Every structure is written in C-alpha cells, then in structure tokens.
Length: 81
View (tube, rainbow, N blue to C red):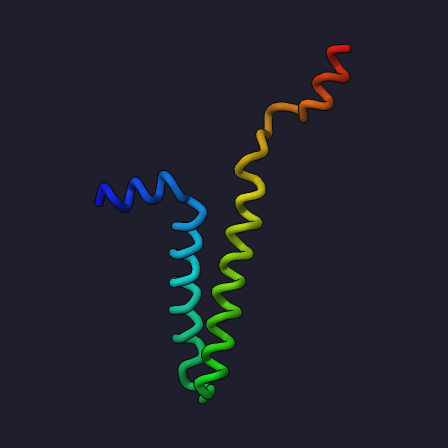
C-alpha cells in the first residue's frame, strides 16, 4: 500500500492516466461486447480509447501548474515599475 501511495505522490499524472484508461477500457468492453467487432476493430478501439485517456489527463495537467491567485510575472513586473 505504501508503494502505491509513493507512486501516486511521485507520478500523479501517470497514475491518473492508468486509472482512467482502465476504466474507459472496461466501459468500452461492456458497451460494445455484443456488436460483433473483429479482433483488429477491438484493437483499434482500445488504442483510440487509451489515446483519449492520455489526452484527457494531459489537458487536465495544464491547469495544475498555473496559480489562480497570482498574476503572471510579466504583469507583476509592469505593475511594480
């Protein structure tokens, strides 16, 4: 359990991606299991689903580093002058 906590603290985006990708693949399977896809179609859908999960986590990570309360440093320098 400590290893999972340490991994989450060291790589939160990677862990979020893994959890989201697994969840999305499970939803994909239960949603499309009776459609009759071929093996290659399942593979392409799975790759697209994992890519979408990666894109989602990447977009979410844009906001993590940006402070909401502070103005950008360029604006702060202009105000000080």
